[in-house]
Amino acid sequence: MVGELAGRAAIVTGASRGLGRAIAALFVSEGASVAILDLKQPWAGAVADDINAAGGQAIGIGCDVSDRNAVHAAVAQTLAAFGRLDVLINNAMWNKYEPIADIVPETFDRMTRIGLGGIVWGIQAAAPAMQENGGSIVNIGSMAGRLGSPNALIYAGVKAGVDGLTRSASIELGRHGIRVNAIAPSTIATDGVLAMLTPEAMASRLERSPLGRLGETSDIAETALWLASDRSSFINGQSIAVDGGLGHAFMP
Image (cartoon, rainbow, N blue to C red; front, side):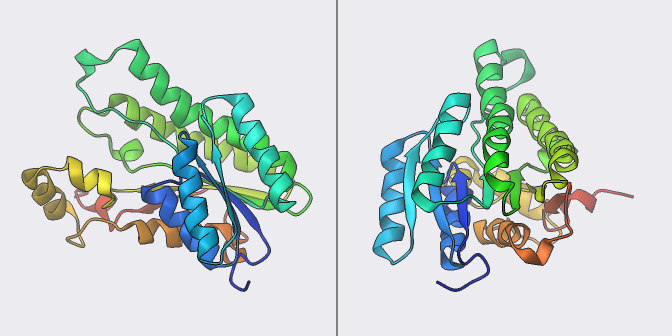
């Protein structure tokens, strides 16, 4: 295999669909072996089977990223399969949009355990495996963590926390040759998002975008590839907005 990630091994969480699947597919096309992690093992396995049938190398692992032991086991399984770990993409998230008055403890617990806990356990498990060769960890945040969003109190808080986790981990792990960065997308045109947006909501988001479009999964995947590759070897502790300029659109 040739490509920017030839000979390297990666884990992508939440990789059976959407952003995670797009990232995993691009990494494989650039020569990486990829562990596809998803809460539902059959979904992860199906993606891995498709990759292997096309000539790539992948394994599918069922993993609840909010479970520390499960995440550590998934890293061990990846090392057993590929012999190394060079890249971790912390993408898995569960979200529920609702007014503040409707939030219940179960929603808060689930979102924070997956959106923050999953990243903590992923970093904790992956870092020792990366110390020999160095590595890159990329956390998927959101512009909601910077700008806020109605009916997204927990989501925005979690994604703001992703930026803080990223900065702290980059300081602690940089001395071991492990870079930690984040990507903060605006609205991305995944199947789930397109199914959720009403025509009115879609029109509003397009009107607010300086580029007049939603982001594509390829926009995020290409950024993740850059951060995973040697081309970004001096980029560490950053949260990169991939938002078409949305974050600046309403500044005076």
